Length: 256
Image (cartoon, rainbow, N blue to C red; front, side):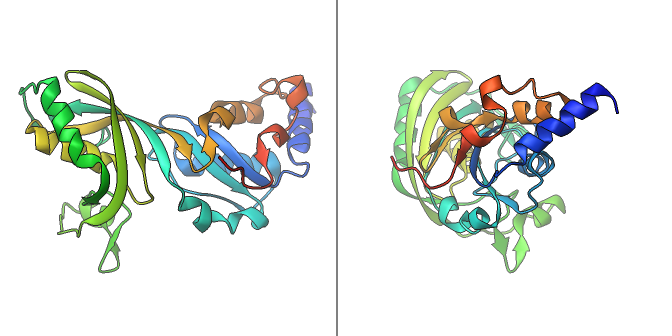
């Protein structure tokens, strides 16, 4: 057996030792949430792996991964936590999905002043009624909205109450940089779309990073790229003092 293959098996053996718990991963851009599940199954040998909320492929940041049956049963509880995001909204362009992955549906050259942006953001503070996007997993009459959207259909969606607090970090047309804290079920894509409607320019979500999910923060996360590297190296992606995932595993819920 080649030396590299021996080392790879040895690394997987190390990662397979008592790896059960809550693992915080910084999801990479252009990767699905399930790709992390697949990597962890290969690294740990644990079949029962879940998470506490997905991210769209273009988004990055905190994914709360639940490794082992004792932890996957916490999925509902952990998914109910509030979350924080850093978002970049692009004005002047709307898309079918309300984000950068959709087809462009309209363009505008209107440039709103900073005062208009600040005033519009006042509408996204506290308890807000938000209409989910068509490209979402919400169900209408038992059908997921994105299934209908992919067939070119659009149906009326009832507004959903969410809790939302938005802070303006920067504005340099056409880009608005926001920090958002929100309750479960909030769509930052809808926030971007609705903001564009208020400003009469149209808008979509250009970039998104989840910086916190409940008590779990990005600072405690292991990058997805390092997990991926461990599949193809002799463990060089882990420092000698971190020859396993154990430093990143929570055995119980931390409190903030």
